[in-house]
Image (cartoon, rainbow, N blue to C red; front, side, top):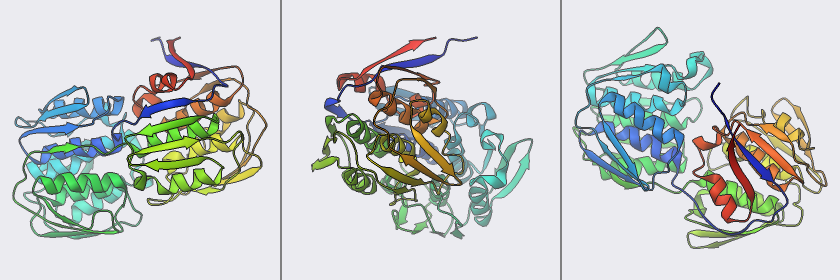
Length: 420
């Protein structure tokens, strides 16, 4: 069997110093897909070197593009696109691969994209993507676990999402830029990553109004120019470092942030007794000796993000009292609870609600990551815990955090990556 990588963490150190946040993976991925809308040479700056970025680059390469990432600058040449299939081998490892569906149909009139992860289609929002493209005139069939989509030219349509879907909004918005006529997306996702994509598309020549609001209007154009764009900072990485400072009673300056994208997290963290001060595009965070309890309910943006629920729960495990955390976005987002209990955390679950009773101290333990944000919560708990912890399956954390162990070490954490 191949060797797996793990983190060895000795807790108890207060984090101190300055850390710089990388570009947002969830903004870079749709931008990479958007390069398919124009047969040109594209430049994206501030792109993090992450597993998901490399997976999307591999997918674009399979389609005939040429991708090169050097020191945060990603060059993509889409002048020789000659294939239109996103295979299961790539889509199963990263659901965001489905973002090529809209651009391929809009620009080339056809696409063959694997169903993400082989899941039942009705249980995941991918059905909303397909419904929208059908409204725009695409012929959609399912065959052998693949979505087959075709259209001579997409037509503008009114699209209503039953629930806000980020990738659905992005897919339809990209497809609509080259459609004939006007497309209106109702109950659209409002996340900053959607706004960042719209900003890039408008710079390419697209006509888009309302990004960041619940209704987005796109007037289709015949062609688009190449992308030249800088990716926004990663608000989830920044929020994770805020929580790291809070849980270790540390004092950390976090650079390259857009605080306006993090209002819900900052306000909730302040309720725990953590000081958070804004200085331009930086945050100065000072954690309390022991955090106060605070209740959280995850909501679509601008509410508290589901991608920060696990990390906030880690913080609440050592709070002075009990807190209630309610997950409204994903049904399987409490998988980290069993692992946090291994540190000595007291957490009970009933349905979509977790009750966290803060304990005086956590103790180091061997734990296993179950997903990207769960892995971050385990690292945070290990930083606070007494003694040594081993975090297994850290390939999850490599999907969303660029060189996290190096950044934490620079702040004084005792953390090292090793192969088992």
